[in-house]
Length: 523
Image (tube, rainbow, N blue to C red; front, top):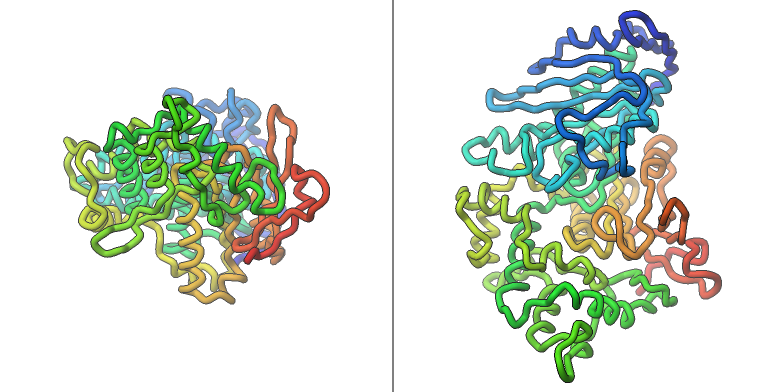
C-alpha cells in the first residue's frame, strides 16, 4: 500500500543547525549536522551541513545546467537554504557508490523526488551526480537525491572484470540511493516522505524503469521520457545505422541535405491529422516517397543521388537480422531528418562504441570499422549488457501496490527511436493485461519533439503535477497540454493524447492552440 500519512512541518533555526519536527511523528527530528552520525548499513556519511540560500557550488568544475531543471547560467543561485548530506555506499566489496541527499530547510512539501542520469556530456554512461536536476526538485519543495551510479567518468571502461560495479551502474546504485535517502529524510524531519516520485529522461528513464521492474516499493509514481531501456538493442542499432550510413562513400548524405529531406517528408505527411501546421502528428502513418528528391542534373543540397536515396531509406527502416528475420530495433521516424547526424552522421555514436569496447567484446582496441552482425553481436551485447537493460514487461508488483507509470517520447527523437517506447508499452499491456495496464500506465507520444526536449513541436511538458494527481487523487490523465516556449513566451500549445489516441484537429481555429484538437483513435 502507498502511504498516505499527512505531515505538518515546523522549522526552527538553532545554533547547531536547522532542525525540523513533524507534529504527527512519534520520532524525534535530527539536526542537519547530527545526520553525520546516522548509522546506515554499508554507508559512510562524509558530509552533513547546512547550505545557505544561494551558496551552493558543485564539487570540482561547475557542471552545465542541463537535463531536467537546467536553466542556463547559474542553476544554483536561486536555491533556498538546505541540508546537504553526502555519503558513500558499499553494498559489495567492489562497490563505491556516491550519493547526495538534499533536504529543504523550510517549506518541505512532504515528498521525495529523485533525479536520474548525470549532467554533462555523454551522460548515459557518465558517473556523476545530476546537480541541476536536484536543484530543480529542491526549488519546488521536494527532498531529493542523486547518485554517480557507482563510478566516475564518462566511460564504461570500469566494467570489464568488475561485475558488481556493472550491477551498481545498471540498477543497484539507484535503489541504494533511494533506500538511504528515505532513511535520511525520516531522521531529519521525524517522518519519511508521504509520496516518492521519479521523473527523468534517457539514462534516467532507464533507471526509472529498473526501479519499477526490480524494486516496486521504492516509488509511488514514475515518469520516464525517452528511456534508454533496451540498452543492448539500442547500442547495436546505433552502431549498425552508423555503419549503414557511412559504408558506401557515394551514399553518404551530407548534413547540409537534411533540411531538404525534412521539408519533403513533412510536406507529404503533415496533413494526415487534418491540418497543415508543419508537424507530423503520427509519423507511423507516414510513408514518404523519397524518389521525388532524385537529382535531375547537377547535385545540390536540395536533391539526393540514387545512392543517397538508398541510404535515406535505410535510415527510415528498422534493423532486421537477415538470418532470423527478427527486428532488432525500430526505425527512425519520418520527421526526424534534422537530427540524423546524431547516429547516421560522420562520427561513430559514443555510447555504442563504449558498449562494444568494454561490454560486448571487452576489447579497448575495438573500433567502429568492424562490421556489425545483427545476429551474433546482438547476442553478445545482450549477455554482457544484461544488468543495464530494463525491458522486463512484468510491472505487476509495481501496479499491485498502486504505482503509476507515465512514459513520454518525442516522435522526432534521433537518439532513442520512439518505436521502442511503443514496443515496451505494448509488451507491458500484453504481460499484465489490458485492464491492469489501463489503471496504471500511460504513454504520451509528442509530435515534433526531439530527444527529451527540443524540436519543432511543443516540447515543454510538466508531467510532475500529472503523475501526482494520478497517484494522490486517482486522476488518470485523459490528455496533457504541451507548450512551445521561446524567449520565455508561449508560442503555441499542443494536445498530447494517451497512446494509441491521437490529437485530431476539430476543423476550426488555430492549429497552434491545443483547445482546437481532440483525442481520438484514428483507424
